[in-house]
Image 1 (cartoon, helix red, strand yellow):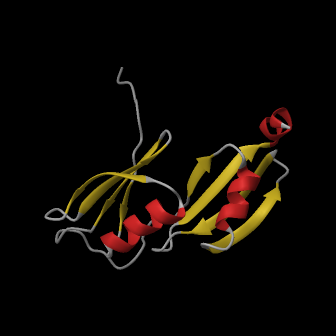
Image 2 (cartoon, one colour):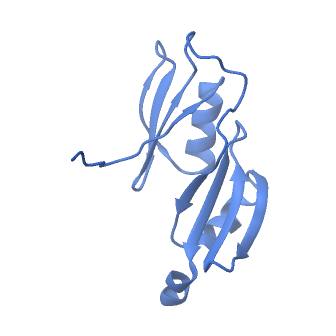
Length: 127
């Protein structure tokens, strides 16, 4: 049986430079690689990797067609909230939910929803 070892999403963008800037300057990702001929880039932060790409001529791109969000499990979610709340458009503010996650969400420069959460039991362990 096949083994899945890693998921690295590819986010489409019409403006590669702007999107690289958002992820590196606002979220602290590092640019691993870039190919302007392909209109492609690879980024990493800690254990998270994403790729960015301008849609090719074979793809019908009319803005974001992703119907979901990207959920990041993080440590020190309150600290991250304090850092991002004035730097990005807010989807929803930080809150502790009944499913025992403390989380918030922002929009990236393309309109993708990025959620950040930490289990409540992990927060209490750190204190």
